[in-house]
Length: 257
Ligand SMILES: Cc1cc2nc3c(=O)[nH]c(=O)nc-3n(C[C@H](O)[C@H](O)[C@H](O)COP(=O)(O)OP(=O)(O)OC[C@H]3O[C@@H](n4cnc5c(N)ncnc54)[C@H](O)[C@@H]3O)c2cc1C
Ligand code: FES
Image 1 (cartoon, protein in one colour):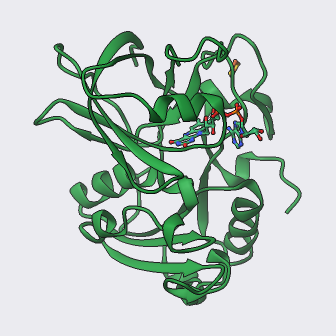
Image 2 (cartoon, protein in one colour; image 1 turned 90 degrees about the vertical axis):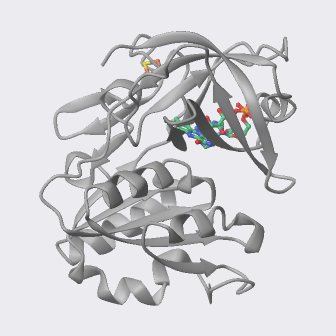
């Protein structure tokens, strides 16, 4: 797929809480095709201390209004500076990067996102819904404010929620949500979130022989396969997560699970 380096204009900046915000980005040109799972490398122009672009998933795309949305968690200087962007500011993106989720050969699937791991899942849910694939969504986080976009997800399927402190949905880890008892009724599990969470999902899926894809968030620099800082070990040797991923089937990964 063709990659673009474009200045996009901020058309909205919605603060979801102290930790999370959603930027709407638009362009005078028609936005290119983007697939669920793909990401953008965003230049943080408003902070001279942040040199490297930051990889951020495509959260959603509204082609009718020509707006690309990214959902960001503030963890350090780069994401903090992005959170201060205002309407009409410009931001430079290299995009769309990476591969996509496999949506073939399934009629009934489950998506699981932990905290900001839901970022690539909304656009995936939209695509699955358009393909008339029955979709169940499982959201997890430490507490209520980490459960993001649940109303948006409800447009695309049944939503189940777990919080560690029980302030929303079931109390406990997302991997222990009661819907997981029915995992074998789904043909594929897609997940994104903290690595330990994805490894537990992968182990359960493997045990129950359910196909499983994970979206990895390895630390990245170039985003185009040049610096090799994002490699992960696979059955076919080391692969760059930025170009060969970020989505991998768990059978490809050499994980200790
Ligand atoms: C393919 C991909 C897609 C991503 N999509 C999103 C997204 O949609 N929304 C979002 O909020 N974040 C996403 N991330 C993570 C995001 O890129 C990092 O949180 C961001 O680069 C941190 O930049 P910073 O300058 O704010 O923090 P830094 O100062 O760089 O780091 C602050 C802290 O965050 C940790 N950190 C940095 N990068 C990562 C990472 N990749 N994973 C886990 N911890 C990290 C550092 O170890 C450090 O402890 C994605 C990462 C990848 C690789
Ligand atoms: S980030 Fe440079 S090779 Fe992947």
